[in-house]
Each structure stands twice: as structure tokens, then as C-alpha cells.
Image 1 (cartoon, rainbow, N blue to C red):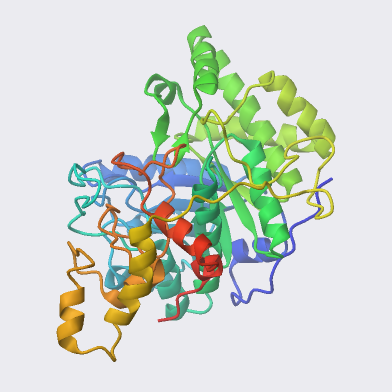
Image 2 (cartoon, rainbow, N blue to C red):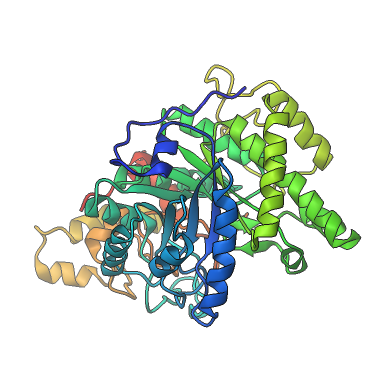
Length: 477
């Protein structure tokens, strides 16, 4: 069996069952619900949400309800008020996801203060998906920015930690990346989030168990004992009907898996649901054996389906108690199906998801060696010259003239650009400087589709300068 995750010493004060479960390393389930859109009738959403929460509260393994903030669009009902309505007279605490889409530090702090007064002490910080009303990105060199902006998840974690030391704060990480730059950028930013105030991690949703094992091995390699929740998603027939290559940013489905889902869907609704239940039961059992603290159940829209999901999980967990038996069952169910959406996928370690390596052993679990792409000459020169030109010791006339070299199209301050070696971040539609979001495609393309992720250039530059450790530095100010 997989060893239990080593938990850090965390002090969240008393009266926080979710944090207590996390600290005790007891495997848990968290049921995710979306805060309804502003144009959706609130009474009906509350009634359905309450019924779902009541069923979740009957299950001993369920430790919290996760509420998403600003899913794809900022126009949603108030998340704190919705949380209060859902959990009246209920044992389950709320974990509130605060999205950076259209957020500001003032909004985060105001939301945190209101949440605290409502008894909410668990949070997850995310940068958030691209807004539906984000202007079209036509120029890859100067991508159109979102007027309301995106607050980086690193900043949100830092703000929450400074606001109240007793908060239990999570941060997102996407292990489902399939080229070297994308994957390591995710892992480095993950460490930056932990260094900036996050206590635990939540993965994006995906079905590639090799990637979920890869993340655990990376954490073991770096001696990071933080708890991790794996987000797993129940697919509905309408999801499959709309599948192309992506359900939503950061969740990419390979063609082979898509074809399998479409075959399941064409039989009948009952057999399709049965296949999804079996898959999610196996995935939850696998996550426990791989060392995850628990799973976040997403995509469940009514209490009847939640009841079936919980029953399947309760059946699967005692059935699969060893890694080898679970791995055989997972492979038998999928018949050798490959879950990578890329033709030549990158995995950070050799020997993932094989019978020989149930847990991480540095003697035999070797990192994959791949050559780093070199940075372009202009980036090399800029990383050397611009810090000197923008230094406080440099005359103001020279500093003003040097801003032309930055080709600035927005107001990102130079001290912020230091985090990305002063590269002009206007190719990033979200104007991020602390690391990428989780929405890039399998080949490293930006979520908005205009070209490679801007942070590939930063990764190449940091690797060439032997400064990759700077991509992990926490944010204090």
C-alpha cells in the first residue's frame, strides 16, 4: 500500500473539522458546488443545493462542501450568502474558492472578512479561467487584456494568510501538463503558493492517473508534506455531447478517451452513468492509494446522483486496498486506454503507474531527462540590461527612456516584472508575472489560443541562467 502523506504542523485554531481532518491525514471527500449565476433564480438553486448538502452530510467520509466563486464569469450570486443558505443547521464546513477573475485585493479581503463572520475559515485561491467576456486575442505579442484584470492565486493566498493566520488555505495545481516547460512551471508555481501562505493543494480535474502519481512523487522528491486533494469530475451526457478537446480550460480529454465516452453514451443513459460511477469509484480508490488526502467531487448536480456516487465510492474503497490490485482493476476497466492528450507526452519520472513502483523511491524512481529549450537572444539581453536601466541608482531620464525597451502596453510596475526577469508580459492575456495559470493546452498553447504560453520564455531564461529556484520564491510584500 501507499504510505500516508506526511502532514506539516498546521495551527488552524479550534472548531475547524475540515482542517482537523487534513491535519490528521484522514482520507476525506469534499463535494463541490457552483455558486449560481446572477441570472439564475436563487430560491431554486438554494433548494437544490440544500438537498445535495443534506445528502453529503449523511456520509461520514464527506468533510466539507466546496463552493466555486466566479466560475467562468464574475456575474454570480454572492458566495458567502449562498454558503450560509446551503449549510444552515448542517455539520459540514464550507471551503470557499476565491477566483482571481475580475478580483482585486480589496475584494478578496472584504470577502474573507464576511466569510469569517459567517464561520467560513477554509479557502482555496485560484487565478481563474479566462472570462467569457474577455476581449478577443488577435495579436500574440500584445494580447488584449481583461479590463477587470485577474488577481494571481499566489496573491490571493498571501492576502488571506496576512488577513488571518487561522485560515486554512488551499491553492490549485494542474499536474495534467504534457510538455516539460508547462509541467515544471506548474510545480514551481505550486511551491511559490505554498511559500506565500497556502497550507494544502487541490489539483485540477483529470483522468490520467500517471499524472496524479507524478505529482505525489514530485512532492516526495522535494520533501513537501502538504496535504493534497485530487479533484475528480463526474461526466454527464451533455458534457460528452460538447466534447471537442477541452471541457474547460486546463481539462483536456484525449481523442481515444473521448471516443470511449461517446461509445458509452450511445448505449443508454443508465449504462453511461454506470460506467462513469465505476470510473469515479476506481479513481477515488486510486487516489487514496497514491497518497492523496482526499478528493473533491465535481460535476454532481443533484442529490440522487450524489447518493449513487457515494455508494460506489463506499463499495470501491474496501474492494481496492492494495496498489497492485487497484492498478490491475484500473487497467482492466480501460483496456489499455491512454489518457494523454498529446502524441509525445512528457512525464517527469520514469516508471509511473507500473506494478514495480507503488511509491516513490529515489533509488529507482528517476526523473525524466529532457533538454531545455534555450531562450532567444533578445530575452537574454533584456534580462541583463533592463535591471540596470530600471535601477533606482539610474538617472530618471534614462529610466524613462528604458521603458520604451519594455514595449509596455499596460501598467505592470517594473518591480513586479522582476519576477519574470523583466520580460514584457503583454503577450499574457491575464497579465500574470508570478507564474502561469493552469489553462494551457496539451502542447503548451495559451488558454486563449494565440500561441505558446508566455511563461515558456521565462522558463527557458531561468534554466539558462541557472535560476529556476527563483520561480519558487514566496511573495512577502
